[in-house]
Amino acid sequence: MAKVLTHMTMSLDGFIASPRDEVGELFEWYEAGAVNVPNPNDTVTFQVDEAGARVLEEFTGNCGALVAGRRLFDIADGWGDKHPAGAPVVVVTHRAPEDAAGKWPTTTFVDGVGAAIARAKEIAGDRDVTIASAAVTQQALDLGLVDEVCVSLVPVLFGEGIPYFAKLARGHLLLEDPVVVQGRRALHLRYPVRR
Image (cartoon, rainbow, N blue to C red; front, side):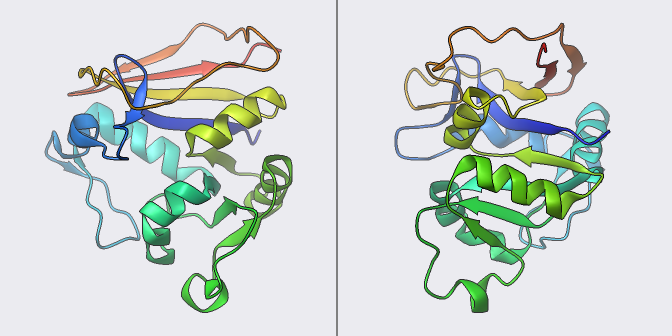
């Protein structure tokens, strides 16, 4: 059954980037091994360990659509309209870029998290929807739209930065026991949301 899941790489102290949107050592695990995981974006390479390859292949192999926030989309320049997950991207924004149709023809721009998740589910069909944005994750959790929270936890402390998780409007959110995959330079955790 298709799920809505979140996935971010996070420092041990809970950050997905520095205050200046730099990921620093967080992405070292993408280059920590000998297994090449192909993706449709020729500007991005994944050379990971065997455990990391299994995790990436699982995330990308069943990803039917990816939801991102406008901030991440702009930082990545829309991934050149070819996200490494190999799926169409739905961007949450109040205003689409003026040149969107010409520059990013496979990207959909939607106003609001609920509408973005609904559109991503339509696009994904029987495949998963992955949220790759801290702010969108926060709002989707508050709306009860997330089935699984995934974290690639990296052994680095940032001390400050952009947190993956923040205050939940509805209070505590219980998760089931994690599925754990130990990789090189990352511990991959998957927590189903308790219903």
